[in-house]
Amino acid sequence: MDTITCTNDLCLAETKTNQENILLDIIKEVCGEPTKLSQKLVGKVNRIIADCDLTHHASFHKLVTADDSTTTVLGFMHQTAAELTFDEQAELNEAIVNKIQDKIPIFTDELENLKQHTGGKESRNEKVRELQQNLDEKLNTLNEQENEKVELMMEWLNHRLHDVSSFSTQTNELYISEAVGIQWAPLNVPMSRRLQTLAATAWICLVLFGEAAAILLFIQLIYSQFWWLTLLYGIWMLNDLDVCHRGGRKIEWVRNWSWWNYYRDYFPIKLVKKQDLDPSRNYLFACFPHGVVCSGAFGAFATNALNFYKVFPGMTCNMITLGGHFRVPFFRDLVLALGSCASSQESLLHLLDKRKHTGKCVVLFVGGAAEALDSHPGEYKVILSRRKGFIRVAMKSGSPLVPVFSFGEPDVFRPPNNPQDSLLRKFQEKVRQLTGISPMFPIGRGVFQYSIGVVPLRSPVTTVVGEPMEIVKNMEPTDAEVDAVHAQFTQRLVALFEAEKSKYLKDHEKVQLVIT
Image (cartoon, rainbow, N blue to C red; front, side, top):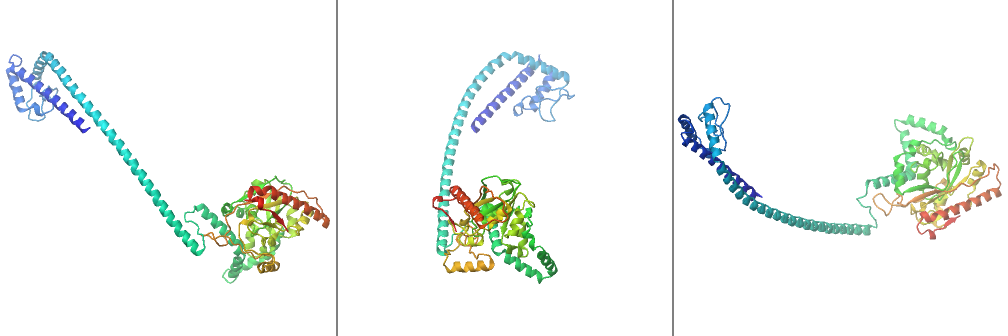
């Protein structure tokens, strides 16, 4: 492209020089003919030609007149140039024009020759330009091909380096894990999963150590400068002990904490209904299995994380738990805020009384703490045969019984094996009889590793609410009437389990519901 530009510039310069020479020759010819101009004007023009060499300046320079009003075809750039009067300028211009008209035929012939000469050069320039363009295109194609080869080679090398690095990292992790018997969690875990693990960890710590921490805090405050506030709280708590038997004190703000949303997504937990409920009635939910710590039912009924109010429009729920939790300072307030009430007949009848409440779902774990001792992964063993108190409550209140089953609940923890005649089981039963709490060992995973710890395992839990079973109100039911209703409910529970297990359990053909 530079060659073509230079060629064009040379052609233009040559053409420009020819024009200047022709103009200079015409002026000289005019001055050489005395009959054309006066002797005085010829002398001035000759002096101008002598002082200003037109061949070293651009063509058509102007010659400034005396009054600086017009110009002639002659001129120069310096201030020392001679000046012409208006009449002398007009005379000179007329002579030049006449001379040019005489030379028009000559100019025409020379112009044709110039066009032919220029045309040949343009043709050669076009060929040069075309060759240059083809060469540029080929060079660009070669550069693109080379760049593609380099990119492919770099991509291949990066891939191989990544494979080698991953293999080295996995080998080191495997070696460490095999050495200490621990499977470590990866470092590149999304923040959402980290928050879920944190929520599940905080929840299990609250369940296992919350009461002890609350008691220690209460004692610490007694011996602090805030002893008087602690004393006032203690007096108020003693007067408020019966609230857990009179409907509790639910606080929706606590049930709506974002903590519970991360807790729900950790497992995850789902709530499924088989039939809509009538908001003008109260229902007794009989939940199975208890599991180690009721992970699924807690998320479904003690929080709003699973949108209970949307799943069952017009209904509210209260989760039933041991009355001893409501005697622990500070801890009791959190349990009450979540909507829990005491597991007493007085509390159940109060919640199910249609004269006081409507649209209530009272969630009761029939197996209780004793059922927690039989919680093992893949096993569904529930205590129902000898539990008939909830049947009497349902009959006295006339509230429909609703079977509720949490599929996946036993898979959340891996407690140690404790057969009926083992020393561990005897110890657990003795402690349960004395305290009402089963001393479970919730073996799960850790925060940064998957092998051991108290954090629940990431195992899905689906809580299915079955169809209500109508109960005839009977304030004084006999044992035979209670047994009949109990047998009917047992059939409903088994039917619910068999109908839904294929949807939520792996190897459901091998899983059976064991009722004791």
